[in-house]
Amino acid sequence: MKGTIRIFTAVTLGANGRPGCALLHVQDSHRRVLSEVVQPINAPPSSGIRGARFAALVAALDAGRKFRASSVEVHTEDPSLVDAVYKKAGVNPELVGLYLQARANMHRYKEAKISYAPYPAMSDFPLIAAGC
Image (cartoon, rainbow, N blue to C red):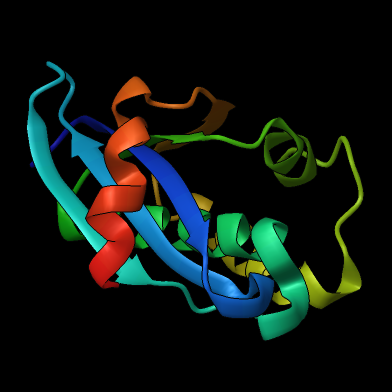
């Protein structure tokens, strides 16, 4: 697929506030759903919700390559994550690895945008992620 895809991300926390699961909702440029994936999050155990959201961002950028998209728009539920990616805010030292991975993955696209825009359908996410 050539062109732009949109990916909405949401996360849950597991036991003891550790990163749990990420939901990636992938749409094409016409807003048709291409995929909806729930996967475990690979983030430092003590990084909490912020680490989980960074890991979901990295997973979303990886997913865009699987669809052979030339451009990607990733929408996150965390406005402070957008600020961190665009260097308007600092990054916790524990999350620098995920931050650098996200920035590197953004350069794999002709255009990559990260924005704050929670997807309304994510209200079903706790039910979807229950089996993760």
